Length: 128
Image (cartoon, rainbow, N blue to C red):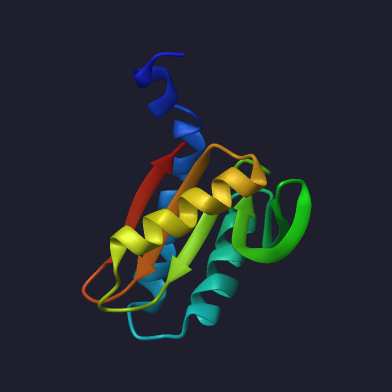
């Protein structure tokens, strides 16, 4: 698979997810807790016909031994992991590293970091 093909994985789906993110932000604006945005985004994703689950558990293994778990904020269509934030100042390098690890553990290829903050919601797409 070429670099361009890798970048296009689930492009249509992530476009639809971005639309849902921006609709939630248009309705709520900035300043709410992450949990409010998570519930609102779930409602919007379902409203636009996407299958989504929240707080999806994944097991972290070390040398084939389970050593921990993480909960993905939202998984859409069993294909895209969404990591939500609601913070004015976030360390994007750390957020990216966290999402890359979530993708490795889940076996999925595409993730979105969504930060609902003022003056607008920001979405960063990560493909592994």
